[in-house]
Image (cartoon, rainbow over all chains, first blue to last red; front, side, top):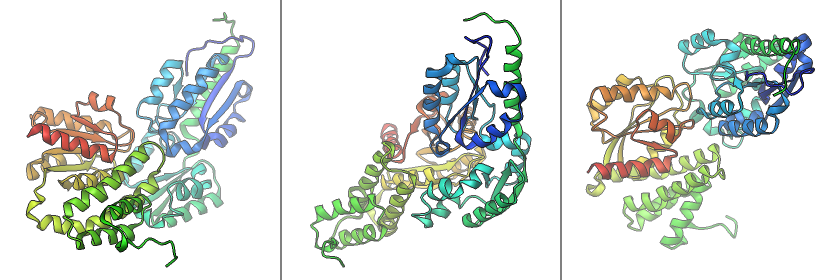
Length: 220
Length: 227
């Protein structure tokens, strides 16, 4: 999170900028956050940027350029997410921070479990609740497999299994994830991990904003 | 056959080459294969078919990919079409005296990374540019690169990574090359979606290939510089 620099000391504001693939999860977490929840504004970027990470940093730069001064704190709910350092440069410019992980798979699973899974099998293709719900749109159509099904092995030939990192206990999603693995010709592994480090980050941000609201502040 | 369907055999050489580039752009593997056969039957040199029709076609594809006009699935279709043509040309080129390679290029994806689509595209363009390509595959620790250097004595070595978590390993490999004095002798190219020139400079790579076509051009330039 960036340093506190509010303009409205009586109503501190927290901006959470998130990947659209985390929207449902963050809304669910916000409902658990008590007083801090009302201070949080959530703004999401298209989940499709998952397949086009070069778009992430410029989009966040635009939002922060327009809105940074409206908020006391900013939490960018992204990992590094394949931006090649571009996201960190933008966040430094705007005094904001992201989650200290490579991607959502790592912050959902937690670094030790994620490392264990990839050490066990480097050819692990990860799904989350969001990716299971949107598998056909983001994976099948997103990679052109609906038009060019023969490309499947080009994309997935080096993978051995699908690992579904589940955020919720949902039998229908588990079944859909198994179907997805079948479509890709891969083995299936189910791991319930919940919201992992995303929950800790949202809680820390909302706790901090509540604490901030309880003190006197001088306008910038 | 519909009335407006193009009959490749009825086209002049120049029109056929243009049509093949269009077909390659549209990922029409059968048509590219047929065009390749026709040009060979007409006495074209295999090298010329490769450079004028296939490599030039893929160069255009690469430009449109870079500019956001084509996307990965379409590029893979194009590569599939090119591969068909190359399947015919490769044995001819191998058997022909004038097919002397301009250099040996060892290429592989770094440790921890199993993504090889970009590497395979680069390999194809390098082959088209006249390199003998030794593909050491995916998930390569530094030992594999060192073994490949010993075995093949390449003119250029290329490393590929798709993940921001694996790209720093390129720096580890280059550092090891430097310790062993390899870096002075062997140009090292790096590429992959999350990389940029700044990163390549930071890890002391010789060159950064931002796409497959550019990588092949750079490799040719590096070989020219060495000779």
